[in-house]
Image (cartoon, rainbow, N blue to C red; front, side, top):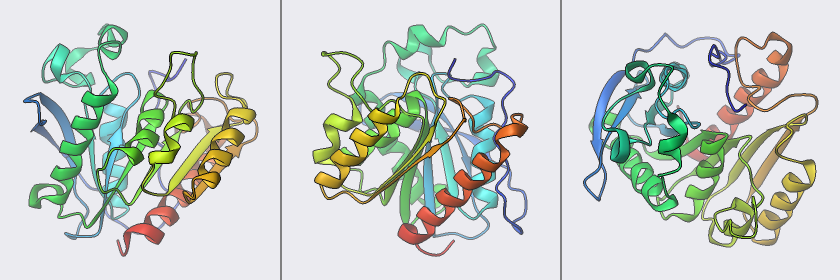
Length: 261
């Protein structure tokens, strides 16, 4: 299972920063696709921004709240929906728990996802998105893999971050595995994995790191012993230390590569 329906994003283990409230926005990709997004701005314009690349649920409330958590930490954030082309403009809240996500996931492609990420990054760089001076991506599961792969898509990103994204090929026909695309990566990588994840082995993560090193791509790959897939969840109190550490690593990665927030 790549998510828990009751999951909530953990709070950053930092002091300061007022709560931020986001708003629904509608964006238009290069191919004319209209899709839903949720944008939360930090208190001050400029500084870093982040594209939130969701799991298979698309623009679920988990990711809307996560955008607000990033904004409170001083990072403009916009989460977007994958399914504008097949399900119309909508969000997890509007679609309900019975929405058939997988039938729409199967109709996404690497190219259409990259178009939507490019549009979301452009939004973050605009006045409405906070005038972000450096843009990152962060993704989870399906979105973790897609976040890694945006490093090879020419978006001008400052860095990519992925939580428990499958990095190895699923089969011989899987040409979109991050480990295969590393030679085209144009920015640093932060990868966060669960040591008890049944779908991503330590050998897969090690091979990804070796490929990044061989390509000269700066990287930090962290595996949390005993943590399962989808450990980044406020309701999982037993993984609080892993969540806190993941937050701190994300903020340090953004600070190092994106300037003052």
